[in-house]
Length: 111
Length: 115
Image (tube, chains in turn blue, brown):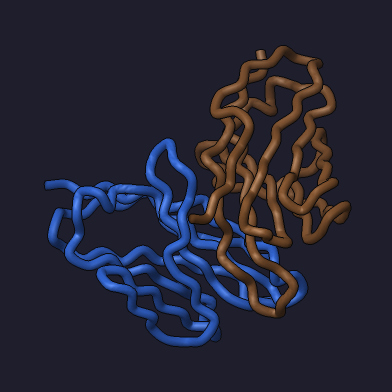
């Protein structure tokens, strides 16, 4: 299966750096997505990792270790608007179109 | 600009009613999805369609059916609504047909209450 584990909640301070971890089952693993979802809104795409290593996109970076079944999303220079839920989602080789989502990590950024 | 629209933002139905949730995308995407999102349970896949008239069950298809007669439209049907189907329903679409997955674009969601 593709069970996804991520922390339920995290709190961080404006201007700081926060790392949101995600673990997944490696059997048949293809790639990993991160989405952001503000309260009452739809999820929006942040990043996709298929190879090991770090992908940087402005203040947000995402890391993948295929052998460890581990990913993290790194948010730098936190802003109040980064308060949201962050969803980790994995895909498999057998059906590249589908993703299995984790329950999401609710990040609260405090002044 | 990429757009996925859903027919209603809020819907209230009675137990036993047949409910239709409509989703339309304007991006010519092959794949379309229906999810429900509940607190503490995350986003769960109900049904998935990778082409017109093609569908595949997701993780929780019981009590639901779907229809995809045109590429841009994917409908979710609750045959006989029950209170445990009260939830936020999210539609999504993505490109398809390759070995690599593509990101999904989500609609705004329909909050369905069954009384």
